[in-house]
Amino acid sequence: MTETFKNFIAGDWVAPTTGAYFENRNPADWDDVIGCFPRSGPEDVALAVASAQRGFATWSRTPAPIRGEVLHRVGDLLVQRKEEIARAMTREMGKVLAETRGDVQEGIDTAHYAHTEGRRLFGRTVPSELRNKWAMSFRRPIGAAGLITPFNFPLAIPTWKMFPALLCGNAVLFKPAEDVPLTAHLLVEILLAAGLPPEVVQLVHGEGSVVGRAMVEHPEVPLISFTGSTETGSIIGTTCGRMHKRLSLEMGGKNAMLVMDDADLDLALDGALWGAFGTTGQRCTATSRLIVHERVHDRFVQMVCDRAQRLRLGPGLDDQTEVGPLINEDARTKVERYIGVGRAEGARVLIGGERPPDKRLERGWFYRPTVLGGVRPGMRVEQEEIFGPVLSVIKVGSLDEAIRVNNDVKYGLSSSLYSRDVNAAFRAMTDLDTGITYVNAPTIGAEAHLPFGGVKQTGNGHREGGWEVYDFYSETKVVYVDFSGKLQRAQIDTEV
Ligand code: ADP
Image (cartoon, rainbow, N blue to C red):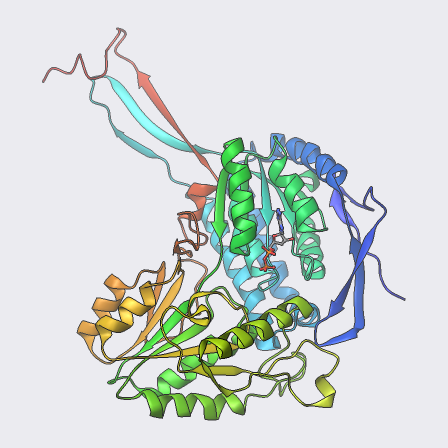
């Protein structure tokens, strides 16, 4: 029998007021129904917001080191349940077990980092320009934080948002992607088991255009953190702008790996395969462009194609599998559409470009790893995010040209350079227009304790992860204490 799951609102697991549900199916085998999850409505969001405000009233007054202790226990519970969560995650979104284990590990790292931040959350004390006066700043929590997350990192991305939000003293409203509601359910279970006061977290399942939208438009949700497509981010940005809300956006990428003529090609090969086809290319940091120096172009592209051909497709739960399915039918249709666009623009399909012929894989959203050769700057397959196992190869004549091609897209999340030349490395670090640059490593591989995010249309200037995200989830308050016993006028009574 199919299990029916609930929302978590006002301290309880509850059915949606709509009475409606949607099915969650395994993308590697669509006959495998994982469960039914609430198709909630704006009413459920309203109840969740009212509860989050009650939760906020007490949690915001709980000392930060104590909030940190709760997150430490969350991290420990994630350690205990790592394998179970990784398996559930692979079943619901398809990526291979090694990767879902990594996804949980990122949540563990984020929890343990948040724990230690509970004993920091620094403010500043600085000299006042006036005698007998103190000047200082400290951080205040903000309120109910609306967190809207995508399918590709079902645990890690929610924790990137939720743990710092909680550590800073906010309550959270969590709207996970429709394709990964089970992982979200398990995460909330763990928060509660760790002793988080129940009204501090609310989980509302459902469609983005209904539940996500209601959250963004609710006047009592003062901050929104979103990771997902640029289209949705723009809609959310418009509403938040109109309503003067604090907003963090993390959106698309068109990340490139630059391979110069002095690169260690075997090393670059491993990086290209992992960057392009890990998570079936469905990472915002995935390597979707390979910019190769003409002197090594033909040889290197041949090496990539030889290995990519042999990558084993299959269900992520199978030990032999190296590449899992795409998330759903729309995602595969989008990839197929882009292969058509690429062909029409004059790109050549060097390998892949089709569904696997294997009968075993017929009931999943599989697509063969694909390499497009002869791609020129400006083509749509060179400019637009495909979010699938498709690598576009561009030939260049120099590092300068490679940097120019890298930068000539509207996105700016991640980039990578393979070269043995220290001068080239520093040029790339300085001039590649992205939030993250890797040297001799692929475009993926962010660590939880460093800021993560992109420039240009990838984001709106905020960062997730590391120390910077704590600025997003707290408001700076400045306090002046004048103990001179008289009126002192700033900028006026400032004699030496
Ligand atoms: P992706 O293509 O990565 O799935 P989406 O932008 O479609 O990206 O979805 C990311 C998250 O945004 C999901 O949780 C989705 O339900 C939510 N979402 C989609 N549309 C809206 C919207 N109009 N308002 C708020 N959230 C939305």
